[in-house]
Image 1 (tube, helix red, strand yellow):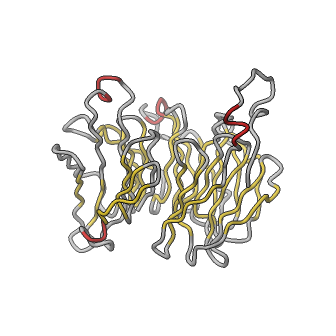
Image 2: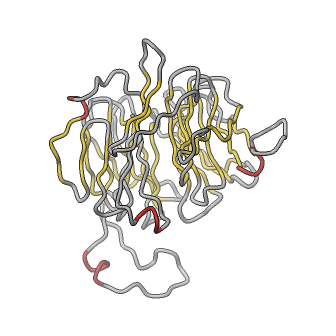
Length: 323
């Protein structure tokens, strides 16, 4: 399952374990009571469209891509009177999802990446081919122009929509092969558009930083354990990573020095997913121990909240950090 928190302060948010609202308020509708968790391979959220016409309807649509492991049939359900079904995307299970406005990008065990326009009946608009094994990570850049994908083939691809849509025999912009294990963790930097962070699996254990304009690897840091997920702070030059064996911890790093600032423990199995709250202060983590945990990682002190931001030449100089 994929864990996603909406970027509005009042929207309802669906996770793989429970329907919840933001600010944090638990409701009583548990997904595990409605659907068996075993076939639930991926779920994500369609946020309210940013155009005013869509927002004015006040309708929230949540899309769940499900795969029945016995029949290999995918289906889709939403918390809305309208039901949208996406068929024919992949020949095998769907293991990763990423939203780019009205485009739902899916990655499958078949190694293909499919862009689905959820507004139209013939929803498959583009297919990217480059991975030789399952696509286990997808992330669109903030501009929506570039897509990063990671696979079980230890490869990271950078796709540019203008290149991938052409008739070029090589669809990807860059093919990055420095990782030595599967790449699931991907995160685009919010303060430097061409900076991408990637994390490798148990046989790799590194976080690597890439210049996506040139394809150059800028730095590589050995974390000592499997890297499952990555999140950049919205307020500070910091990066949060989640890990597997042996500690199943969350680690906070200062960028670009990559000095370890804190380690957060509590999960008893690998921490597969992380998501930030709308204000960027709280992080939700989901692990193989079937728990969700909420961490005040990127907190902002009250003094900073009350003070009016002042113009400065140094980014984030008016923001202080709370561990």
